[in-house]
Length: 222
Image (cartoon, rainbow, N blue to C red):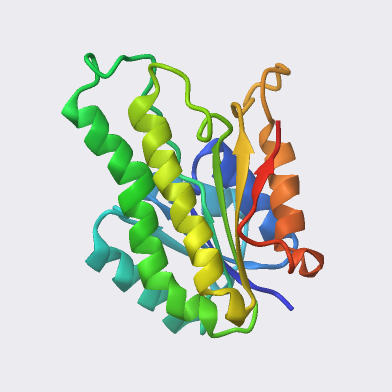
C-alpha cells in the first residue's frame, strides 16, 4: 500500500534524495520547505502527477501555518502515514562566551520548536492509520558533546528526547519514531562521514514493515 509522507527540509541534499527514492517506490509526498521556487523545482525533477505530491512553503515555527498545511494535506490525501523531519542547521566552533543569543534562537527554532510543532500537529493524524513512521537525523555527539558545540548539541538532545517521548506516546497505535545518528553528512562522498544514500537506505529499512518493532531507538550510522 502506498503511503503519504511529509518530508521537511525537502529541498536540501538529504531531503531531495529521500523525496526521489520514496517517490520511485510509489508513495505520495507532502514536501515542506521555506523556498517555493526550490520546492517547485524539486517537484519538476520528481516528475510526479499532481495527485501524488503537495508543495508547502512555510516556517515550521509558525504553529498556525503548519496546522493549516497539515489540514491541506489531509484534505488532499485523506491521511498522513509518516514524517521525515530532515531540516538541518548547525552553529558550532564557538565557546559559550562567543555564542550569540541569535545563535541560540536559531538552533531552538531549527531543532526544538519545529519538532514540537510537527509532533503537536501530526500526533493525531499519525495515530489514525494503525501504522506510522517518524524519522529524524541527529548527531553522534549528542550523548557526549565536545566543546564549542553547546547550543547545537543541547538543542539536538532536546529534539532526540522529543522523538523518544513520541515513540512511547504512539506505541499503541503502531507508530514508530527513531533517530539516525551520524558524525557528519558526507555530501561529496569523500569518506569523512555518512553519505546521503546511506542515510536514505537506513530510512527505507526503518520505514519498512519489517522494522515495525524498532522504535525509540538511536541508530548509530557512522
